[in-house]
Amino acid sequence: MAVLAALGAMAVGAAGCTVQPAGADGQGAPPVRIDVPSRTPDAPGPPASPSRTPEAPEKPSPPAKPSASPTPARVLWSPGDVGRDIRELQARLRQIAWIFHGPTGTYDDLTAGAVRGFQGKRGLPRTGVTDTVTWQRLLAMTREPGRWELYLMGGQPADAPDPRCMTGRVLCISKSSRTLRWMIDGRTVSTMPVRFGSEYTPTREGVFQVYWKSRHHVSTLYDSPMPYAMFFSGGQAVHYSADFAARGYAGASHGCVNVRDEGAIATLYEQVRDGDKVVVHW
Image 1 (cartoon, rainbow, N blue to C red):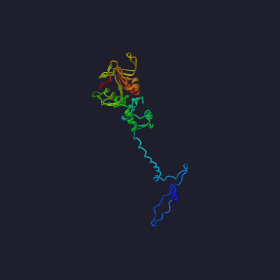
Image 2 (spheres, helix red, strand yellow; image 1 turned 135 degrees about the horizontal axis):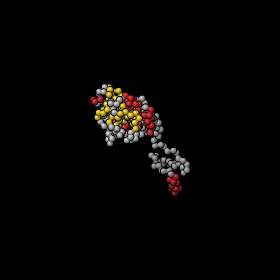
Image 3 (cartoon, helix red, strand yellow; image 1 turned 30 degrees about the horizontal axis):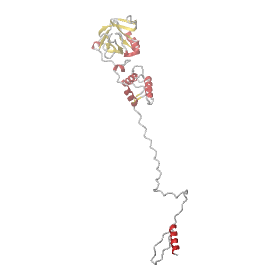
Image 4 (tube, helix red, strand yellow; image 1 turned 45 degrees about the vertical axis):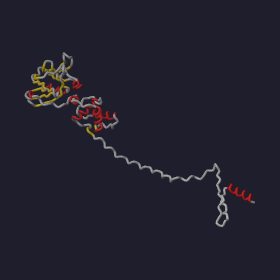
């Protein structure tokens, strides 16, 4: 019997039961069975408990409010404007070959077209008006024009007449302002831009008289036309010059006083007489 009891105890231990200590009454407690659940290897186990509560999905950010429209560039000059500033605009456009006629001081269609082309080339709105953005871009690409770039084709103001011009009938010619005043008894009748000889063929200075007029004159020395010629010193004369009309102050005469406005000199030619005074001064 003892052997059978021992074998029974071993069988129970092998089944996973344990022997409980005796109770207070000396009776042994019934064995406690511990069941170990079997698990099929391929069977999915219970889902693992999450270690933390998942975060709620982020809410999309509200769309950005559109920014206020940028302030448009301030307009400086537009078609129809006149003055010295327009001359500088034209002279600077001429430096970079956007305009080819000389500065006139008038914001005309040619100027508007040149500005429009300049703007389009640089990705600016093609408005044809000069605003602050266009002007700053042009300033960065050009240099300050000189006086005779501003007045390449004339239009400059005349300086004060020489005191020797204040009496009688006088062609008062200033080398400083490059202008001719036709004066009678101290009163200016008309004013026009003129051009002089180069440093190698300078126009003489001093007081002279008109001694010969030749309406359709042609130079025998240079074989060039000298219409409306009014001779005052040797072969030097006041006359119309097609070259001056075309090139402005980019050229020079051979010593004569050139006029570029044919209509103006035609009128002057009719008014001037032989013997009228000519004053060439600085």
